[in-house]
Structure formats: C-alpha cells, structure tokens
Length: 255
Length: 62
Image (cartoon, rainbow over all chains, first blue to last red):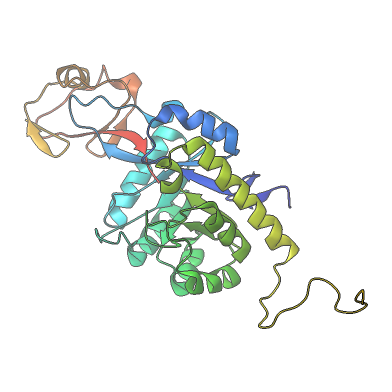
C-alpha cells in the first residue's frame, strides 16, 4: 500500500477519519487515536446554556491530531460560514467540514447551500470538505469552487446501511480530481472496506464506532478494514464472472 | 438588557460578571456581536445594553 495519501496539503497515513459525536465519554478519545492510528477527528460547535457543565471535547484530543470542525446544525450557507469562523478561531485548524441540513427526517445535506458556503470559505482561506448528497454535478461545482475533497454520504446518517448510494458515488470517484471521502452510513467494517475497494480515498465514520459496545475496539476494526480495502484496491479488484471457474486444475485426475 | 444565546437577560455589565453570574466553566468561547472574544480579554470587555452574546463550546460531532 502507498505509505501516505495527500489531502489538503497534508500527508496522512490513515484513511480513516473518525467523528466524535455520541461517544459514551470523551475520555476514550486518546485510546481510540492510539489504537486505531486515526489522524483526523471531527468536532462540532454548540451554544452552551447557563448552568450546564459540559466537557470540552478539545481537551481530550491529542495535540498531533488534525481537528476538522463540522458545521452541523447550520441550516444555510451563512450559518455554516459563521460556525466555521468560530471553529477556526478556537482550534487553530482551518479544516472545515461543511454540513448544511435543512431536512430533519433524512438529514440530507443541502447541496446548493453547500456550494455557496464552499465558495465563501475557500475565499477566506479554509480547507473545505463539503458533505453532500452524492451528485456528480454538485461535486464538479465544489471542485471549481476550490474544495479540497468531496464527501458524499454512503447512506443516510446513522442508518448503518453501507454504501447504498453506490451508483451515484462511483462516477464521482472516476471523474473528480480531489479525494472522495465517503461519509455517513458506514455501519460495519465490511462497509468501510467496500468504500475503499470502490476507490474512495478515505472514509469518515462516527455512529457505528461511537455507539458500539466498545468504541476503541470498533475503531481498530474499522481501521483494519480500511487498510484491507485500500490494499486490494491498489492491487486491482477482480471482475465478477457469471459462470464457475475451478480453483483446481480439471485435468490429470487420479483415476 | 443584553441578548444571551438568543434570550433577553439583564445586563451583567462585563463578560467576567456574566460568566460568574450564570455559572459557566472555563471551557467556553464567547462571541460578542459576532466577534470571538479571547479569554485574555474577558476581564476587560464591558457589556452595553443591546449587546448580543453567544456562549459556545466544542462538543463531540461527526
């Protein structure tokens, strides 16, 4: 396997990005990092109401980790830009995942607003990772706008269904010249391997690690699956065939 | 009155007093009228009536 992959000017070893939402406790974050080798973690920004004691997730993220601030909660481009600016001010990271959702049932991203926010944030010097409903044309617009990656959802967020949007993501992997990171829907290691076998450059996994009975071990399982899928992709995956092909020779039987 | 996280409240007159009065811990970020106020300035910044203050923090998120 290639030792590194390049994204947003960084050379990364790990093609697994992990979201920190829904973890039972932030205290396990250092162990997740250590065991899985993950190098990029996502966090979110929220209003804190009086008298609520909350822990700051940043206190638990090791120093060498790249923090990607997620604009989740934003309903339009303006709100996303604002969250991005707050995030950058406080994390010293300019990696931003644009997540704009106007639909509360399926939580599908608003692609049009995402393109708008991407243009604005690229202009402001951010490394923009837009999260979209898979669509080749939107992806092309995002690349033109200066996005460093495009992140199509594999399935609706938190559904653990795997890459159900496969046929929409495949053309993006072929046509788009920035890394495609499949985000959302990855519910088990085989889904992560599947994403890598398809040729995605990386995956972002949150729910299926965070709410598993053992998030640390699950992060390891996901990490190994990502490596396995990537190695196979780089070697070349064999085509499916319609008829049986014997694995042993069919001649010179012992009779 | 100031607007704290979208709600009108009595003006505590300074950021430091606001933090004490509302029982915030240090793990927060303060945005005054759209601008982030860094922690080193918390004891210096006064609040005027009508100021919009937002208190945000980082939480786990995907």
